Length: 165
Ligand SMILES: [Zn+2]
Image (tube, rainbow, N blue to C red; front, top):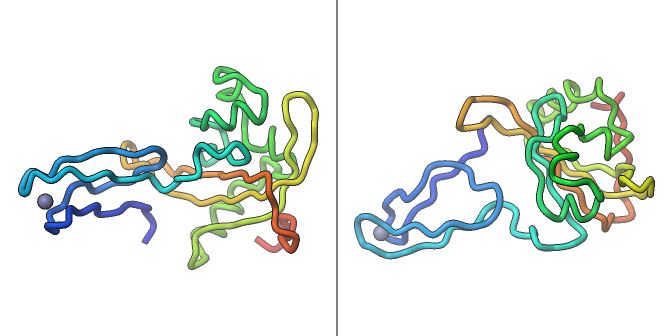
């Protein structure tokens, strides 16, 4: 399955929504039984200050980011849209996106988690856990990446090795 999308169903089994909810939550009233359901996005940890998310195009250009991304990195909403993930996770190089994409397509989990080096606007560098997944935009069929960056890293996590991708 290449697309990340789900069927969200009411407890009466009627389909409420076919799609992909990335962040936040949505209330939907069932047309059949009139029950209102709350559907949560895949990223429930959104308000956690040690965690942020970028949605990027397949070149790593940042299209969307969470508020926590702005708070953590120090960039404004305008500034972050001029950045690529490799401007912030500096051990990802710009030639690596194609390799990452191929890796995601060819692994069962379709995800990649590694230890990366985060550089904030003020120059502070630290190690973080980076997760990346790919999905296809339901709007325009564009391949996109979701990067989630966690300031808390498990000890055993390995650094990204481009040769192994
Ligand atoms: Zn229903």
